[in-house]
Amino acid sequence: MRIMNDALFEIPSHLNAQAPIELTGKKRDEVRLMVLNRRSGACRHNRFDELPSQLKKGDVLVVNNSRTIPASLQGKQGNRKLEVRLSRMVNPHEWDALVIGSMFDAHTPISFGDGVIASMSGKGSEVPLVRLAFNVEGPRFFDFLFQNGQPIRYEYIEEPWPLEFYQNVYGSVPGSVEMASAGRAFTWELISRLRREGVVVVSLQLHAGLSYYGNDIWPNPVNHPEAYHLPQETADAILKAKKEGNRVIAVGTTVVRTLETVAANHQGEIVADAGVTNTYITKDTPLRVVDGLITGLHEPEASHLDLLRAFVRDEHLFGAYRHAMRMGYLWHEFGDMNLIL
Image (cartoon, rainbow, N blue to C red; front, top):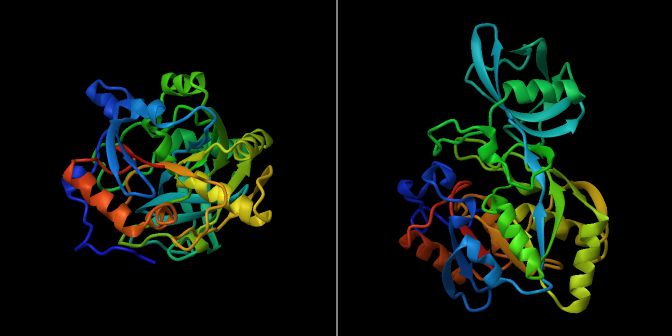
């Protein structure tokens, strides 16, 4: 489902954030923060480093500690150059991937150098993804990847920024092909302040796949599986918060997807769990766990915006987005942030 058309919601090009805020001499947590009231639709405007003033003692903040991998690879078929964008690891030697290049031959192996080759072994989880079988796996594959890969970069980013700019400070488990960007504005100083004021900060992992296939083709979450892991410590913190009447606030749509998947799979209960999710959250999805959300600002074509509709009515959400555009908020992974409470 696509919920808005360009006539109602089109992001002006000057609002596409093209560079990390650190390059201006500021800290990550000095981006702007729009606070949207789920019930009234009222908006307040802050800086992200003022987040502690929006949260309460006992609130549980759940972050995704998946670390970004350099998932864009340059390959060749004979003299033809191709770009391969990994989307998810299916098993130790097979990946769903997007192959970019008009002359791609599905029957010819792709060579990447260092003796690494990949052959098409089948269809990916949805068109236009394909499944590639690599001749290396495990530590050797990741050594190759980190030596030869680059961060996936979309057309609104003009400069090839280093991988470190695409990492959240707490990212520790490599696996996401794109940064779980809702956490980018956090600094260790801000996390320490939140904890000192009684906010409980815990983590889970969901390894994010590609969010865009190009040529106006976007993933359908039902056909876009992503691996997750919810540890016992995090499950316990959420259960304690619910028992005591405190809020659970997700940092990013990936966290919402994980927590609501676990609850749906366990009759509404939160337990330690691991698996693969293809949950599609829309305005008709009852939220069993998450009370609030920290997220970026999303394109009208992206399913992430469908997920936000589970939190807030359309008129409030779209009104806030139009207001954010008038206020000059910046979009995408290096942009400003939105807190829905």
